[in-house]
Every structure is written in structure tokens, then in C-alpha cells.
Amino acid sequence: MKLATFNINGIKARIEALPRWLDSARPDVVALQEIKSVDEGFPRALFEDMGYRVETHGQKSFNGVALLSRLPLEDVTRGLPGAPEDEQARWIEASVIGEKRAVRFCGLYLPNGNPVSFGPDGAPEADGKYGYKLSWMARMRQRATELLATEEPVVMAGDYNIIPQPEDAARPETWTKDALFLPESRAAFRRIVNLGFTDAFRARVTGPGHYSFWDYQAGAWERNNGIRIDHLLLSPQAADLLRDVQIDRAVRGGEKPSDHVPVWIDLDA
Image (tube, rainbow, N blue to C red; front, side, top):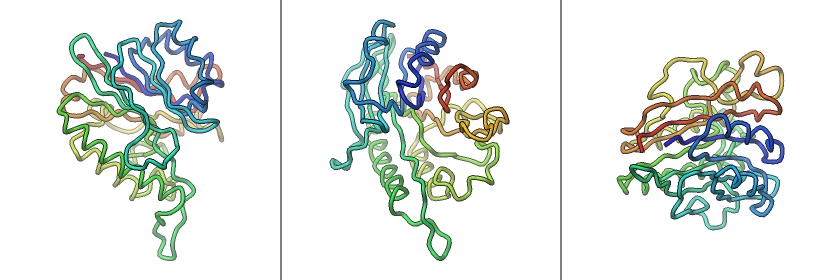
């Protein structure tokens, strides 16, 4: 079972690049982030004609997540529990029915959190967009706890907007005041991982130089000034099934690319 995550940075902008990657990579299921479209505006027919079932959780002009699946999906739910008033479309999950077993697959777009306000002591203040990021991560930790309790294979895949370690940035010193790399952000990420999840990529690949995002500005792609912020976290039952993991780096060099590239895993499912 090939499961992928891909922040496409706008379905309209990636209307040619996304199908091209799907034809090449042939994922069974892909979690998309930043579709930037309401559900009714998503080009479902294009992907259904390619053999994918389409499930969206959209929002006008901003955010938005979706699942494209060549395998049956059951029990599709939308929205991260814990804050009914939160209207931002950042979470979708479903059970993917594989040949051998089902996998609970969650697609997420974690808040960026910038800009950050700093107090007189230099510490970040947990308000505004940064406060929303931290509270969202606390809700995600609660949902992750619930998912672990099922003792089923669980994969939480998406754009986490978290640089876990200095080695996950080409120039970590430039990110020290950024919400993606603040100690408080990284600690919130570790609290989720430490529940019992495995960072799929780091389970197989060590060392620096592996990135999933390059900014459009300042020649970041050409200079390989990237960061690794797109992750797949695996429950113990899913980690036991892991056969391969890859970052499709070359996609960033294609025509009209997203600033992110796909990251995928292969499970024995």
C-alpha cells in the first residue's frame, strides 16, 4: 500500500503537475494539503477518471485538505476534534481497505503559526496565530492518543509546518525565531511522536540534506536551501509494516511546481 502526502499549494495552480505526478508515482492514496478550494470547486472528475476516489474538506482560497484513493475508503471524517468552532479545513481521515488489512489514514495541514510575538524576556507569546498552532497541536495529540488506543495501523500524514531537528534545515540558524523551529513548536511535535509514533522517513534515512520544501524566493531550490516539514507518523502497528519511504525531490524541478514535494511510504498492507 503506497501512501503519500503532498502539499500542492493550490489545486488550480497544480492542475497539470498533480496528475503528472500521479501518473508517474501511482500512489494508492495521497493526502493533499492547501487545495485552496471549496468542495464544490475541486476538479473531482479529473481524478475520478484516473481511477481515484475523491474526498475533500475544502475552504475558500485558504487551507483545505483532500484524500485521493485507488483503494476503498470507509468511515471518512472531516475536521480535527476538540474545537467545534474551528472552521479552518485542516484535517481529514479515513480507513483505507488494503489487500491484507485496513489502515487508518489521516491527512493534515498543521497551522504555520507565523508571525510570532515575543515578550520582553525573548520568549514567544502563545497568542494569535502562534497560539492557534500550539492549541491545534494539543488537539492533535489528543486525537493521536485516541487513534493509538485502537491498536490498529495508523498513519498521520501531511504538512506539519515543523522542522523537527537542525539537520532538517539547510540553514537552521535562519529559522530560530520562526514558528516552524521554535523550541516550543518542536517540543509539541515531540509530545505527539513520544506517544508511540515513528517518523517514517527518519526510521530509514539519517543525516542532513533531505528536504521536502524549498521557498519560491531567493533561489532556494537552486541553492538547495530547503527544510523537511512534510512528515508521515506511524503507529507501532503501522511501523511494523513499513517497507520503504522516499521523498520525490525531483518533482520540485518540474513545470509549475508546488513549493513542497511528495513524500511517500510503502506498507505491507
